[in-house]
Image 1 (tube, rainbow, N blue to C red):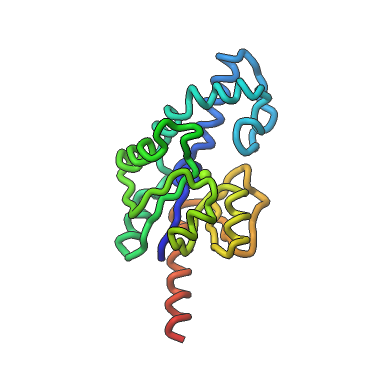
Image 2: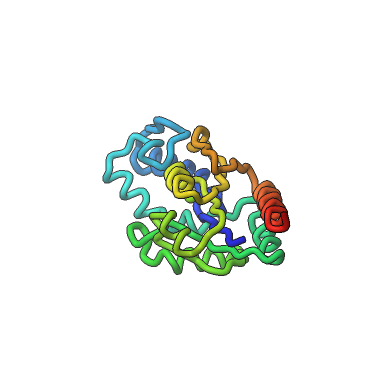
Length: 200
Ligand SMILES: [Mg+2]
């Protein structure tokens, strides 16, 4: 199978960093105490910041955060195993020039530093349906409600990486996953089912 994999909050636990850096910025730089919802999707829904405060937070910290964040447990070994078993890994991220000087380079360097093997890296994929269709993706792994909805409406199955902000977004074409070992298990099941369908 050709497997699409999102980076932020799928390969990584970005959310923990967003909260930690966000609170540091909130207390120490803005001298506020403004968290309104610890389960919100992204900072405008987590903190009571003005647009300028939010913009300046991300401008200042985004590159540091995405450089420092670690892969989730077993992500590296599961991906290695999937490739060894003949699956293709396409890393598909919405990271774009909007926030990054060079979204390809910063992602490529992080993947290299963390020894994550892959076949192709696609950046600026704000429209993941388009990116998945253009790259013939069989199944995509992501954490975003928006991408989940659009992908499954387009008939592309999704493994939804569980997070506090996506608790209620399951669809008929999605499976909620909580870890990379589970991702491996689900892909195994799907591969077996596909083989059986072909032989029957
Ligand atoms: Mg994500």
